[in-house]
Image (cartoon, rainbow, N blue to C red; front, side, top):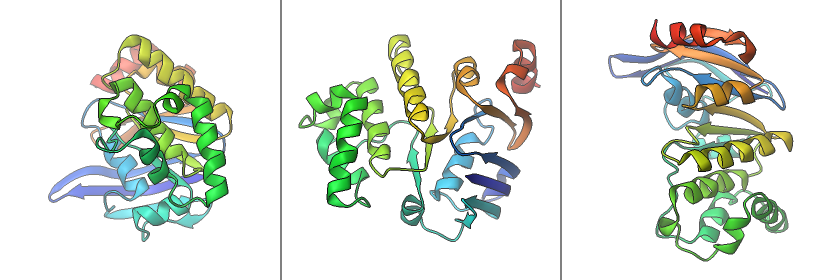
Length: 231
């Protein structure tokens, strides 16, 4: 479904991502792992169009996306759950979800809203509550639900459990697994490496802007993980 080839991103003179290539197949959950500063979030943002790549290609179902604006990439089937959740704090839960579904026709949006509420019943209960008053875990549910409202083919998730309690981490990871089982393809950056490995079809490990490992998660022993993260 997604193919990234030779992707490079620079911030001025700083090369943040260099010649990165990977793929995500239909129905997979693929994780990008690595220490802070490895280039994982930059890679996700380049795929969804939030930052401009200096070279390479990003294709979804064979269509090259690099010339497209982020909004056009949503229409191509990509939705991005950003690091830090980024809900619209002054707006209600329902208004946040409605914004996520702005590309979806009315009846289809109602159907999708019902599916999001089935996945996250708490959002149904709090649909009229101001989003900024939700807890961190509830805001993460909302951020995921907002992305799902566009009915994506590929769901990109950046650190979905960051800053959450251990109990809420388990809840969010279980919901992500449910989303995958329901047929949505997922590309994820996640700080809880062992949980990500357990959930993933395949993993890629990044270090200093490049990919240093790719393969099945069960090939990553704790010793290999330490070596890949720490050198």
